[in-house]
Length: 191
Image 1 (cartoon, rainbow, N blue to C red):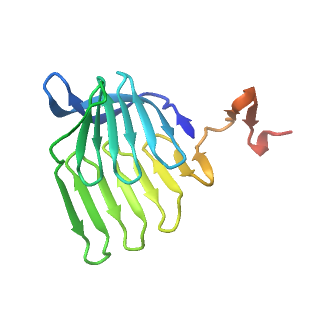
Image 2: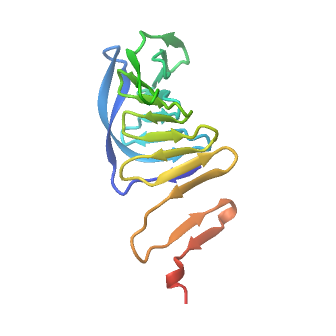
Image 3: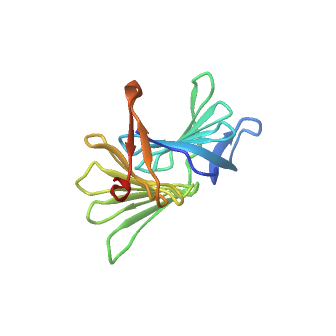
């Protein structure tokens, strides 16, 4: 897994279930960290305690005030309350179109999630916060990117890695299990 903490919290729209109004609504949150798992799933944490899990296939799961709002790529939604009871909800509106030239299928969900299935088998899921998740046609590698954050490559077989642009004279310290720390220093600074 790769854990990313932005230099400054990132403002992001979030679709949540409001237990007071019993309505699905959109709020604005400040993302304070994210973890990208081996399968490309990103687990986002917000300053108010809200959690948003976004998946390479366009599925989402948002935990807000004890309630999970889970939406699949086809727009099916369920609500899981704090006691664990699962209740089906009204479908999210979904529209799909196929580009006649490229034969790519574009699907847009009312909560702002867009998925694209390209003719060659590649897929793209763009989530409400702007995160883009790309998967190759014959590959288990998922590329996860979001403005202002390092690009992450994730694969159950190959692990995860991050493409991190660094300011000049920067080093990277990686902490491993067992207390081992690996420090990476650009070769031009090694005597």
